Image: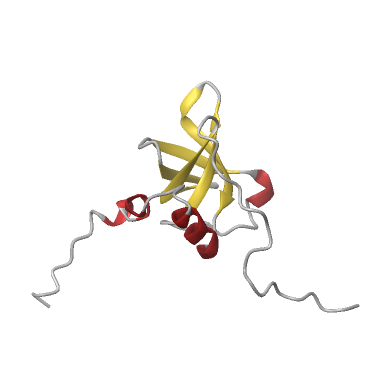
Length: 118
């Protein structure tokens, strides 16, 4: 049996975009445990998001990752994590104007380093 070859360009799936009705983009802020995370969404609402069962142990999600969230009906404070975007996919999203640079740097605004004092 032949050995499985790695994908050389890094993207082997079509990119899914948010439709602004049922899905939004988000940045992972902090983990809560049990596959749940605090996520700051592109519509400036913080939600608790849960990794869907198919990706629960397959996709490693960390703070500052960009994800696509599926909103739950009837509960505006909760969402499901559909996709974790890779670096090349994030670059495509930024270049096409789906997410702004300020959105990806929003979580780092609280950190201020004065390099002149060092």
